[in-house]
Length: 403
Ligand code: ASP
Image (cartoon, rainbow, N blue to C red):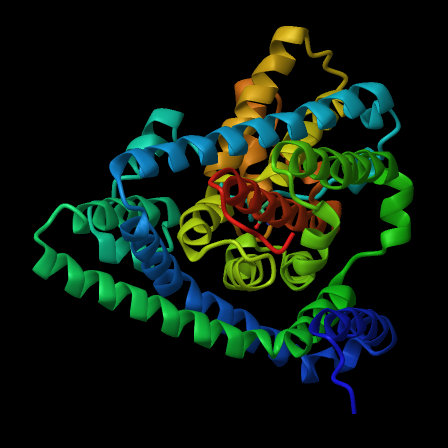
């Protein structure tokens, strides 16, 4: 019998999980463990994978100039695409004005959302870990990445007899982590079946939400679609000279996983595998750009934060001047960099924007009910942008890709 391709298996699992969640909500407890096991397995991979991939990636970049050039290109791409995403969101939210007819009655309490009081300078300072092991335990991605880049860079500065041992060690560690990743990937359809069925059985009445907050949802969805299906493919095609359709097909497994898990961090092992093995980007580029991308390049999140903050202002009847909208854009960009690649991370960051422009934090309660479905789409957009970035940068470095 011909084997069904993995992305089809995942799509079938997605459809079946929705049917199961709707028809048998009380039976979901018998299958939700599959999702828990899958998520735990993915999370188990993240720290050793990020450490080994960045360290081996950086040591494989031969000269300081090359590392500098790669860092520059990577950050340029991240800032450019996130800003474009925000501007698309800002444009649509000003045209459609979704806050005009929103149903205030759908607001929920926001007790469970932690409020961020740290200023940007403190967030930057905190990137330097005081204890790298604690940073690993607490999943402080930026600190881990910072340490890994530094460590990889200085491996190349020591005597050959030392650097060879460490290079071999981290290259081998990385190979093993990728092998485990390949093994875990085989279970994606089962994991997604468990995760989505549980999500569907827990979700509030979508019809009622669609009536009350429909315009907000449409604004976010249309903006995300424009960014993912137009802006990023155009950049990939004309700047990166890659075929966005083939690349999209190659990325189907991580994209569907990002959509189902709402976590770009958890999806990272699958993203790395697909960008390297399907699209043919070198290990040197994937190991440097993708862990960084999963942590700081969040186009979907940036767009969502901007639309959500503007929406909340509209609901409260606050007219935001061009200057205030500019502050929203800048804050959305910075907070998307700081947002973690985990479910609902945006909600926390929106409180930062609301504080900046003096709106009540309870405004976040207005969008709480619709956050999850929108999180699925913005996470997929985040991962799609990371993968396009890796391919574009690889191409600009003269690599031969399969796309
Ligand atoms: N869930 C998103 C991600 O993991 C972050 C967010 O909440 O926007 O990429």
